[in-house]
Length: 539
Image (cartoon, rainbow, N blue to C red; front, top):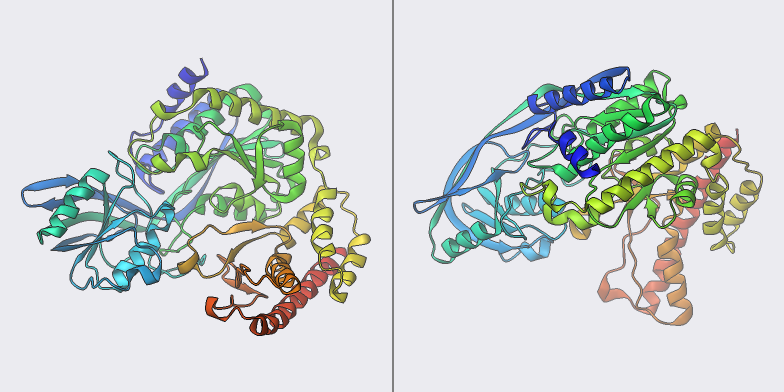
């Protein structure tokens, strides 16, 4: 019964792209709004400016054969005919050094972490490629991954991608590999357009001071698990919870940030959270329960703050719980100090992520039943307990536990003394604490690590991991130590107190002792900054 109702609600979505700011997204949001009104809810709409990219046509041709292709967002239009160079799944800079791509088309296998296709594109273009063709890791599917032309993830404008890029199926990738070996010329054709003054919207309804359910309407290609299913679950839950909860359906989650911003995603939820803050409405906002990339068998919970994570875990039982993630709309609220969490099964769904085979046939419907009940249980717990659901002591405990690891430093003892007087006894103060001490953190260099940023609380103490690892190595004499090195806050691109990792060829005892001195200074700077943050909160 649940399956049938969700598939029926899923039919509200278009069969393929509903890109940020497109007519397809706009019409889908209108149908969603109508369903919320049918549930007896008052529906409102927040409209905001976005950048809209859309494919008009894409193909790859070799000999007399035309291959189906999907243009990669934000590919420019172009018509290129050249020889093909196969680079495999090269991703790290040193893996590209042997390739001369000047005047050629690069044939690239998607990296195993698919969102890093943008870095593969950058490397290909820097080495002279006139076009880039990605082929899939899995058979019989085409995929869209946004590409940018920036070496960071700043929130502000970035450079537009300069050469066309498309993706083809694994099978067609093998055809192009044969063409590369035979020296055949290949043609890449992309017809695409960008509208810089487009608009997207957020549809919201119900009581935003209650538990608020969220999902996003825009999608690439079939997009059933990302996020047609989430929207459908939200609509089904709305028919049960009615006006005891709030509901938000975000546009522009997959893309849309203006000016080719390299942090192109979550633009709708970031814009809406800013809007609520400007209007003075964010303080009254309840908790966000976001639904995204569901459909796998193992339900996961990514939650902001240890207090909200522990509160939800106490009522949900065996759901795997961890910190919030930068890839979900919940992140936009987490950064405002608002308790926010996403229910998802993302690690299981890489194979269909942003593809034309992301359809209802792959969904684990038994798991969806469990997800429905879990979200309903969490929502009702908040309706019943309100802020009593939160484990506020965990906010202080998380800081104390980290500080006690370096209690031998006087700066740490000073912060511990201040922390002993800290009492988190209201949601207002908890939000101020979360907002001050929660940030996304990237460890190392973007182009050589190719990993996701992590949301860290308290972020100023993240450098302790390197410090304690090195301290242990020096005490034991086992110098096989992993140092992550530089820390930065992506988006803001703010460097945190930290030190470049030691070169692998320089891990001698003498060098590491000197490195330890520099790293300890970074730790002391972090402790001083934490002390100032806590003092400012108490003031």
